[in-house]
Amino acid sequence: MIFERDSNCDSPYFTNVSKVTYITDTDLQTFTYLGYSYIIFVFDRTEFFDHNGKQQPIPEVILLGPGDFFNTRGYKGAGSIAIELPAQTIHIATGKPASELRNVIIDIKDLIPADIVDRMHSKLRVSTSFEEIKSILIDEIESELKQWNTQTKSSDVVKYIHEKKGLVSKQEIADLFCFSERTLERIFMKEVGTSPYLFISQIRFNNALQDLQLMNMDFSQLMLNYNYYDRSHFEKDFEKFMGKRIIQYKNGIPSLFEAALDRSYHKN
Image 1: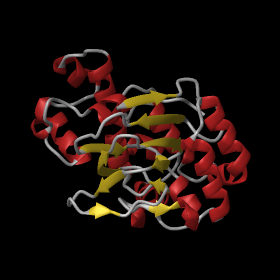
Image 2: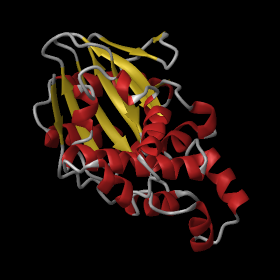
Image 3: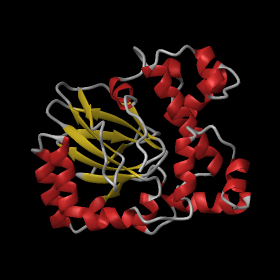
């Protein structure tokens, strides 16, 4: 499997673009979408399974929300392109409370005319660079991307949580942005799909895992940097957000997940 990412994504509409190409058949792998919404273009034979192990039908272009996780299996010659969007995108695009869309695979053709989606999918299939990918997206769906980046009540809060790497309390956020904790809870459930506390935990976990993988950081330093009580505290977050215990991962973290960690948060 070849994993590529755009390390200089300066688009005002999306924060990261990545591409996966399967050069051999793969084992089942877990992929988690923490902190962002995603448009994913699927090419050829790729299978998605939910947390109960049930295979899900996969349209050619899908939208997923923050906190979703699926087990995936790719076959030789298949691949995908993932566009990372603000967490609130799934709510803005569908007009539905994001809390009702957790682990729901949305066919992008329900949101964008089918002829545009088909044309875009065909162009991206043969694209050869990230600049070309971004150009195709802007040419075909700039108006939708612009609309989906509309400022919402949670936008500045979500951005702040990312900037703080999840090292912030719900009370601090409520005070800083002049929301009551109850109001903040309602806003997040509607726009992000989860509670402020759980979203903060997701972002902290994601950043901790990146540091663990990319910086060869030992657990004692990781616990200190990210305010985990001990290793078991981190392992509980791992199981919560990945759907499996660390020990259940054969031969370490799967390559797709490991490669996905090789990214950094890009401010808008």
